[in-house]
Length: 206
Ligand code: MN3
Image (cartoon, rainbow, N blue to C red; front, side, top):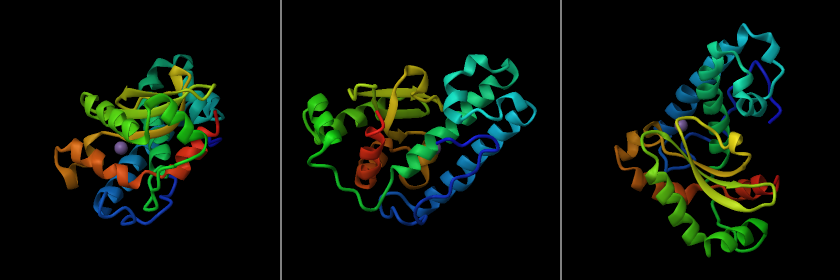
């Protein structure tokens, strides 16, 4: 992502109903067209009067929040984080979800967690353990060692010096239309639509 201001709403790489029955079309439409669009708009509005930051990538903005004027720091943190996190998240969904059985990501997951199944258990525990709104992540350090982390609100893994491999949105807006308050059920559904090919590509960037 080398995108800079003005940031664009990245189109979904599949149809709204592509993830049915696991994630419903109505949720995808609301999540992408309303929530993500609002983050993009708010981020651009914040940067509009600060041309000195308009050449900064999203990664640079989010990795250097302390360099921003206080008047826009929180807006960029929340809305820039919202754009960054969702652009990763939506690409990591697919109706062609096959967990790897070989390859670098498979090897790293089995080395860290023992198996793909254990990895799923651990990221589910992390997702259920996010109090309020936030994200669970499978992240990699520069050596390729994996860890599962949680971030609150729209915070990213960038300040931790980690690279994103898989992220899981556990804000209620990601699931309440279909699952009401049952985050547990949403996460179980999400396991069926993880775009593992994209996860492997993300991991290859470490
Ligand atoms: Mn969301």
